[in-house]
Length: 130
Image (cartoon, rainbow, N blue to C red; front, side):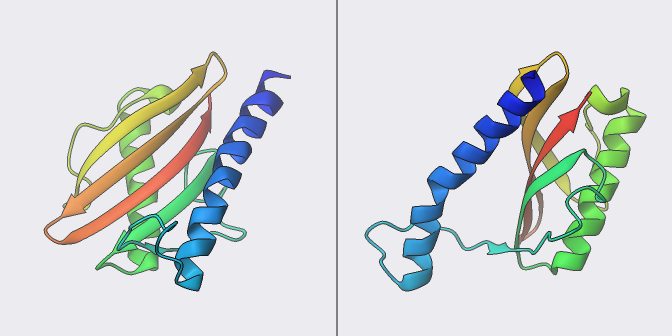
């Protein structure tokens, strides 16, 4: 049951952001969340990029295909440095990445990662079942 509760919490948090995203798309800037990042489509790929689920992928000055390669490489770095619970402390494909772990229970955790290289930026969020 804890996995279902945690997934429900993550989905509720994502749903809370939808009005702001919709406002940005319609031009209602009073309620928009400022962001220069473009969203990448993860349909059918959220479970093939390494972590259990990649929940979001946004890019700036980089293609989505390259960003997905970076997500896979970052996951590989984490696994090399401690398994599924590991952290990556080295550069990945020339990008400097910072991870922030959010909600965690014994069987899973959520995290966000920001990777930068010059003016290029990749943000991704993921859920990892341990």
